[in-house]
Length: 130
Image (tube, rainbow, N blue to C red; front, side, top):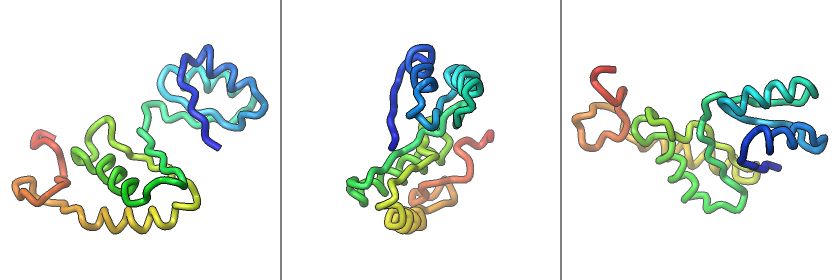
């Protein structure tokens, strides 16, 4: 089960770390540093992205085609060189295999290449200076 509880680490995070029912904690940035220290005291598993990977969560009752389209847009928008790229996709197990198959097929149709070609969706770099 996945639960998201936004809020300050000192309020929300500490309560979650102290609760024995919570098996794992995740956080990033300043919150992640605080959670790492608190989880260490209790030997609780912690996953710290420390900068975020903007996960896209696909639940088992999702419209599969819509989820695939959203995931493709989320990751390939601006050549994956944008801070809000969905570079992590979490798919609930009942949809996982079908999602992977459809997502791979969708990704295979995305044209990569010359930025001067109007049919190109993904270019090697977003700016010539890079």
